[in-house]
Amino acid sequence: MTDRTLPPGLHRDTLAVRTALDKSQYGENSEALFLTSSFVQPDAETSARRFAGTEEGYTYTRTSNPTVTSFERRLAALEGTESAIAASSGMGAILMMCMGLLKAGDHVVCSRSVFGSTLNLIGRDFGKFGVETTFVSQTDIAEWKSAMRPNTKLLFAETPTNPLTDVCDIRALADLAHSGNALLVVDNCFCSPALQRPTEFGADLVIHSGTKYLDGQGRVLAGAICGPNKYMDIFATVVRTAGMALSPFNAWVVLKGLETLGIRMQAHCAGALALAQWLETQPGVARVYYPGLASHPQHELAMRQQSGQGGAVVSFDVPGHTPEESRANAFHVIDSTRVLSVTANLGDTKTTITHPATTSHGRLSEAQRQAAGIGQGLIRIAVGLDHIDDIRTDLLRGLDTMGSKA
Image: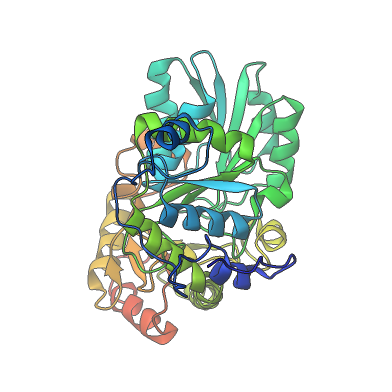
């Protein structure tokens, strides 16, 4: 039994529930989970052709698996790319990208505001192998341009950034990259394809941590790269040899999570906007970072790139006369909550709260944190599906009782 071919022009919400491999002979409506490490071949000759790559067919789950393929096809359909390749985590996807595209002597230009582990992987770890990285302002295109070299192979940005929600101009960076025969890679974790498709603005490759909004319930780790087929072939070789393969079970969980991505992101964004607007009125809050606010420096750009939505992550500063006092106040607000989950994950149905300087960016040097604008008074909230009134009440437990609001 096979599915009918899907007609062109379907909405992303429909693609999110329909795109997958054909049904098996049993005609299951919910996609099947293939929990197997290997696949039996009909004969030795067929096995030889499939292992050589001259004939399509599944051989070993480290290289491909039907459930993983369904996830890849669905995500590619949502991103509007030719294909996608899965990884064991978001960082695994970035590692796969670097291993597939970079070599000793290459140069990378990267936003200094990206996720802390990304900063360390690209700037420190690949530096050991002769890849040089220049870190620049997320929003200053002139800095990106001045950092370009003849050996620059790729530009890397996430937009919005974690945790300050800085938004880069994807089209401007794509034009700059292509003028220097380089690629633009965009981490689309915060927005997901429900809000933003970076390739529509010229990006060459899109990175995802499926652990976040693609899953949507904080259950499993997953990652992926979306883009043209010619790059997926390169990355497939990396996965085969390096082994950052996505497990079939995790692929199935995220595959099913994609079915509700659109409706979840609308609810997340509505809650986040309401929270951000409320935080701006609180005397215990020094500054709010959220692209959906008119006060955000890149608000208009964000609205153009993100389907008119601000996303689901809101960060804010609590005051203090010294960094130590700011940190104490931030810890007080976090520790006073009784509903929000104190965890560094995001993209969950449950609203999460964390202190970036000691968690997601805790392994960076103080100089790196300062360069990225991450102070000790910064708090990040990933708005889930909790009622907004309960989120506000929970935050007031700490905001109204801080030792210093000066």
